Image (tube, rainbow, N blue to C red; front, side):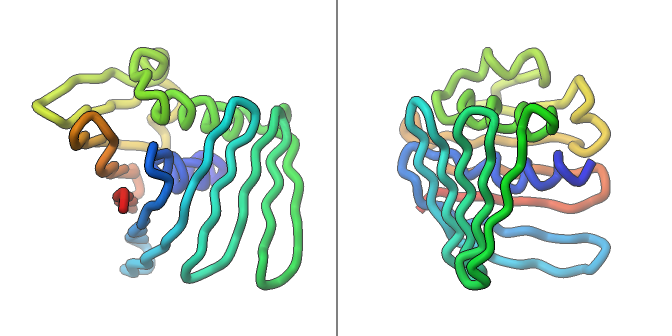
Amino acid sequence: MRGIIFLIFLIGSVWAKGDFTEKRYIYALDKTTLFKGSIVITDDVTIVRYTSPEKKVLTQSGQTLTVEDVEAKKTHVIDLSKRMDMSLYFSFMRSIHNKDFTGLKNYFDITKEGTTYLLSPKSQAKRAILKMEITMRQDEIDKMIIYFTNQDIIEIETL
């Protein structure tokens, strides 16, 4: 479950422009935190850089995820073949980045209302995610809001 939530924190960060802000509301703490970062997706590698308030770099290549805490100068490596939730996440990221919403239909029921896609989970994601909204602007992803079953909310916008 924690893995799915960790992954969803990042999923909306996949924008063609690369730069994003991420607002996380944690219901249990009644606390909102604002993050800034950027993302780069190539054929082989996905790199997410958080620049504020923490400096972290997440690099996914094949079945390996490397999490680097820049300030603490520590690195942690995760084998994605042993973490199906995280492996699925990177698959979701690529689908959203490529605007291939049909690739998400195995995991979500997807409807479109104007410029907004509404995603309702229909698989194991149901345990963590209530719904997701992806809003487009001029054929690019503008905003994503993720509503969790525990009442947490993640809102991510492009810059």
